[in-house]
Picture 1: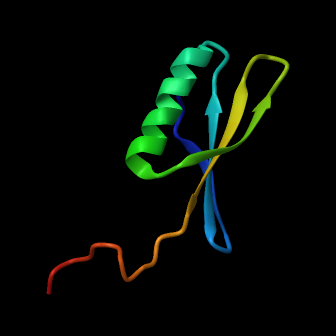
Picture 2 (picture 1 turned 135 degrees about the vertical axis):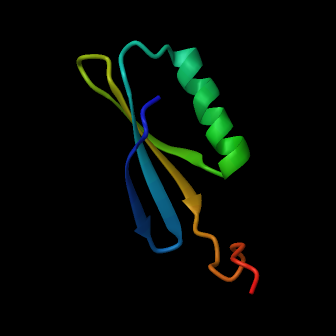
Length: 74
């Protein structure tokens, strides 16, 4: 799985686009996306399949309040 191609914040949601090369099997992609869901709170929003076998996957999650994010202890 490649690194995030872009991130977008829209209202209460944040989105992250990932591009999966054609060599990544469906099972491997599902496992990687499950890890994103389990440990980072992402859910599948959209999948685009291109003619060359490349997949563009959009993940989304609710934005977290800035006050809840851990920060430096002063």
